[in-house]
Image (tube, rainbow, N blue to C red; front, top):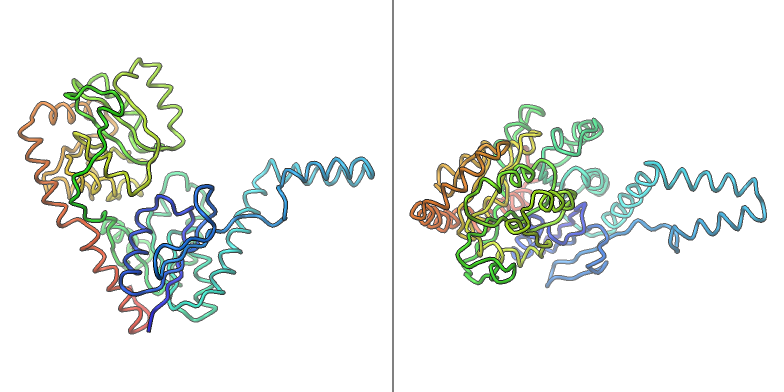
Length: 413
């Protein structure tokens, strides 16, 4: 009998590689997957990806018209009843200029997710990260179904999540799921220290891909053929060492740094590039679909993963970028944090640097650029290591969790 999984994710499900891998693994194993995500401007509200994989994206609309129309309504009310119009305008201002609008929007999205989750005929609920844990608990416990909490981040120490509400919420909800998954063993030990149990560990490895096809970035960006492309791919966000990488560029003897992605830092990084006169050595490309990203990565000489130690979430990361570079067969210049240090040293696939020090970053790049024999060795090591660090192997562990939940009930992590 076909097992059904209802999954929640608090994003538009466009470039979420981990969730895509898990959904397709379940789909291939014979599960029917129903994914509830957020509304996207680029994707339909209802989407079907092959047999047994359906996506439903929810929006935050309550009224059948645009919110901006409320301003016209306020003007009309003020014309016929000034006092009532004044009160209406005050409430509208309160809604527009305070956190009330954010809270209302989030409440609407959570409610719609719960409604869809309750309607779904399912055997197992699967929630991705803390933003969807409440929805999963309500649905799973109301219908007496199994619940998997797949936490991609460390919610108690994470950039941008400084409010204590996240710690309080996780502590309140963490014992409800039948299975908790974390992204690596360093984080699993941390969870054990805080909550007294060890979660399952599923690493964020990419799909195995032996394809050698690539996009010619030298031609696309008008970079000389003999110039090494030094790539960073991913979110342009605070705490990822990108400002220090820019500072390192004048110290890098040879190579053009290429940023692929989008984020809050993009404008400031571009502005600083112009201010420092580095436009001939630093290039920016828009975010590309996750399926196309390897085509760009393979054109690079090396890749950067330079997280800063701003929180335990960064310090403990086993970043998917590290393994994406490995899959593309390019060495990495990486920060010396536990999970990444373990892989890079064991497999000899790159250089470890101090990600807070531009000089250290530049020295790491220069060492790889000047030692072509070492670069060739690390490239071969990366191509060999990708046979181990890939989703085809890791998904066996992931599906075993589901098999156990399906057979004997609660998984006491």
